[in-house]
Amino acid sequence: MIETFNSASYFIKEDSNWNVLPVNFDDIGIFDLASERMVKVLKGHKDLIRDVCISPDERIIISGSEDETTRLWDFETGREIRELEGCAENICISSDAKYLIRGIFTSINIEDFNTFEKINNIETNLVIEDLLLSHDEKFIIQGARHVIKIWGISKH
Image 1 (cartoon, rainbow, N blue to C red):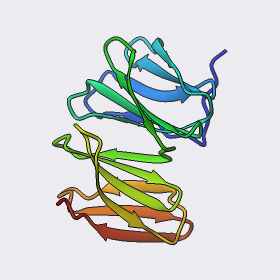
Image 2 (spheres, helix red, strand yellow; image 1 turned 180 degrees about the vertical axis):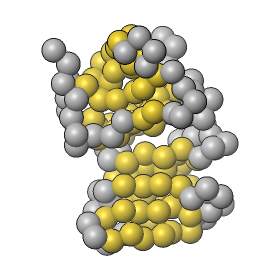
Image 3 (cartoon, rainbow, N blue to C red; image 1 turned 90 degrees about the horizontal axis):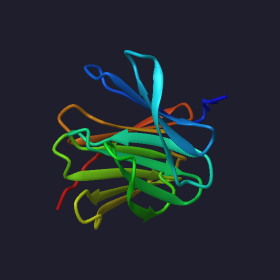
Image 4 (tube, helix red, strand yellow; image 1 turned 60 degrees about the horizontal axis):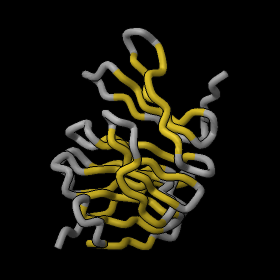
């Protein structure tokens, strides 16, 4: 039996035929929406998966877990490409795939998606419950308990 967990996010793209979401606590399932079947399971995390995100070219899945890692997966093969330190409770990627934005407890990290070097770090005073990029990608919208904060992105 496959269980999904409401405490974690899922990713579905409007014009896509698949859905990616955490299953069985610490795995990621890729579901074919047409057949309504799971076609792949990605294994590697050792604790609850908090968020998943897909690169704009749909080649890389990014997942954050309470095992204190963020992992990158090849969508086609299901193999792990890279492991980054730090639990990413919320993940966004810019539409040009230049920037990875990770929410870690009360910090928002902006990183270069190719080198994973930190570009900027925003310390907030609230636990991050959700992160979104504005449509023009000039702002990060942070959702916290009963509060929404908007942060400018400095991409130096």
